[in-house]
Length: 279
Image 1 (cartoon, rainbow, N blue to C red):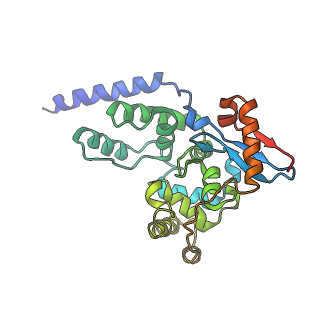
Image 2 (cartoon, rainbow, N blue to C red):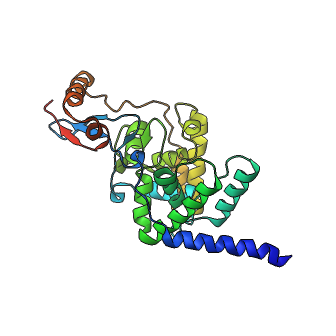
Image 3 (tube, rainbow, N blue to C red):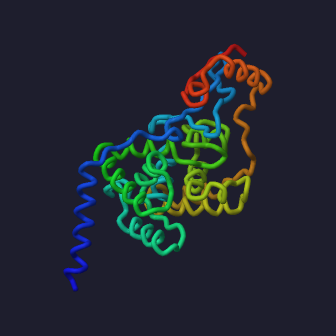
């Protein structure tokens, strides 16, 4: 009886290692590489962004506050710096869910989430999950943890059409990610799991409770003190929807029309170009 069980299991393990040995990290999809165009005035102030459905501005990890990095790690993958890129338990739960139809199961590492978003998609299937795990392992062995975290934070979806922390910071708070406070960082980290559910514009109470949960997780992981968490919890969450192109909107619309007539769509909407105009 044991041989009947171990035989197929050994074959599966062998197939996995063969697949890993020959696996190649594919090219990221358009969503994860597209970057919005940014329009600045002659003093270097951002007056608007131009993008299609996906708004994304890539920034280096050094421009992302440590509070933001720690909030995301504490919430999404507390063992990020020590795990091999995958969660065996999470994969097993997802496989069980796919086979028996028990709904979505969490537990994916940050590396797996990035691979899902940038390479393999989120269609529920055992083959997709296996491919995700193999690429995640490969990525974890070819990129540093800081590189993976930067890729993840520049591509994860935060709602409001914003991909990555820079676009999210502009969409939710009207300023660059490098200016994020602890309270704002915790709010954004909490949104990742369910952007529509935890968007303050949709439900400010749920958003506030979720933010406070993230602050508690940061205390548990010793990223912040309880006193810091208590102070951040006192900051009121705003339900206001930010309008990024709020400065000189009519002038910005004219600039956008001129650019759309003279710049190739792929370059304008996804090339990450920076445009300076005289205002």
